Amino acid sequence: MLPNVLQPGATDHIPVLADEVRQLLAVQPGETVVDATFGAGGHARLLAQDLRGQGRLIAIDRDPGARDYFEAVRRQTGVQGRFLRGDFAVVLEQLAENGVRAEAILFDLGVSSMQIDRPERGFSYAADAPLDMRMDPSDDYSARELVNEASERELTRIFRQYGEERYAKQIARAIVRRRREEPFERTGELVDTIKAAMPAPARFGDGHPAKRVFQALRIAVNDELTALEDALPAAVDLLHPGGRIAVISFHSLEDRIVKRFLREQEQGCTCPPDFPVCTCGREPVLRATPRRAIRARAAETAANPRAASARLRAAVKV
Ligand SMILES: C[S@@+](CC[C@H](N)C(=O)[O-])C[C@H]1O[C@@H](n2cnc3c(N)ncnc32)[C@H](O)[C@@H]1O
Image 1: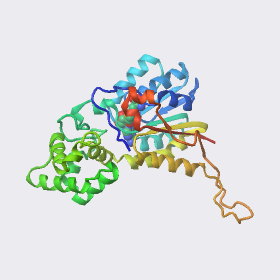
Image 2: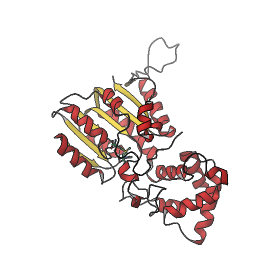
Image 3: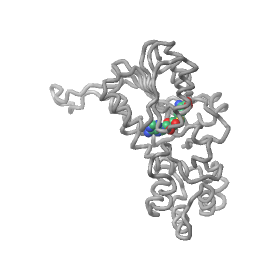
Image 4: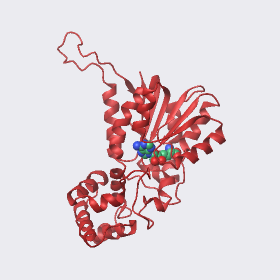
């Protein structure tokens, strides 16, 4: 499993699997498109072009910084639409409750370059900055609180579960020992503590020694997996019959949630096989298209290393 990492300056705003997303969402003029993870608008700009001046784009992001990118996309493409700031799980539900329906919905999960490339946001282990990692800077809970307040056991769980960090226990123990003397304030202090807690050979192994812990903290701080679990059913409610949904995930935990959800939604009758007639009345809601996850081609991965860990799954509402 590769983490969702953008090295500073490496791949600014290159939308991942863009051709494939465009093909699967097959946006037509006059449709309503929802980009639930607008970011810097890389995918949305292409989807807006496919609308050819007819239809609308609803852009969602919990990061207020995405609004400026939305305005830029609106200016450049002339697309109609609006930007809604908030957690996609909440916003999608509100849209559905208000009778909005869409023909295409995209999720491109994780952090964007606009977040990683700004050291002051504290997402990157590559620059010393305040320990933050909130996608929505108005949230109460940042990585600083998590690192200074969570128990050793909880930190171990987070590093193991969300980062698949082999030295989760050793790192959690080192953090708890270090914060007894002085609380963590900066990413650099955390990176130093992580490095010191690892055996020397592991520090030179698979990429930067802090990348898995940083990924794990980011997922925990932003409660990313719960948001995804809540958002997928809301997105399906929002879709018209025949509407398309596409989800790009960057690590196996996210992909597992998406895969399981699509399988459940594809399932029809669940009555025992010896029932003479169906009593459950369950009908398939989605049809996965294609059934397997799509991975980036070698040429894309060579040009954009972030694409290496991307998995795209898509489905049509039946
Ligand atoms: C990988 S980026 C999207 C990049 C975008 N597709 C592009 O081409 O520029 C993911 C974006 O989703 C946002 N995001 C992540 N989780 C979110 C959530 N639960 N609700 C709303 N936005 C979220 C992040 O703030 C980030 O801007």
